Length: 246
Image 1 (spheres, rainbow, N blue to C red):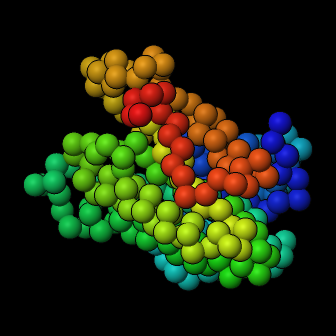
Image 2 (image 1 turned 45 degrees about the vertical axis):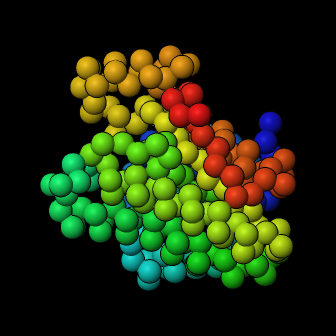
């Protein structure tokens, strides 16, 4: 089992779905987890962690506001003195065909999914450089690798996250900081729960393993990349997609 005892992890978008699963898994592996989210649902996640014997705290976070990011990371540093793992999971969708997409829909998705990750990485980087250690895991998507109709903004943000991660990985590797990407495919979350039966069946037929993934599948990949076992892995994209994209 992955052992993250003594590590401090900061997870964005931690209140539900994949972010919730990542928070629970990191805590179960021994990490102290700062669960960053805009809404109070993260308090429920923290209670789950504590009930299971782990340690977690909720911190209010809006990744689109630099002051909010700086304040949230400051809470982690004030309380625990370090940040060992950063998981940039916060993300939104504003789906619409490109010809009909409003500029606000484009801007808001890029601001949250890509610029938000940049802001969080920048906020923790000084401490990680000082520590000469760190794990950054950015949550992209299969849509950023293959594209997806109606998701020009989302796919662009997730593809951008891959390029950003590879560049940052090169910049900080000499300081024993790794930067990797997890790219989920079709995962059972609130986003996929709204799909109608025909769309769901069509997507399912494209997945070689024959099922949608679970948030825990993504969380397991994150925990591995956060661990000592992944110390020689950086700048990589780990697809957790059941084979829908190879």
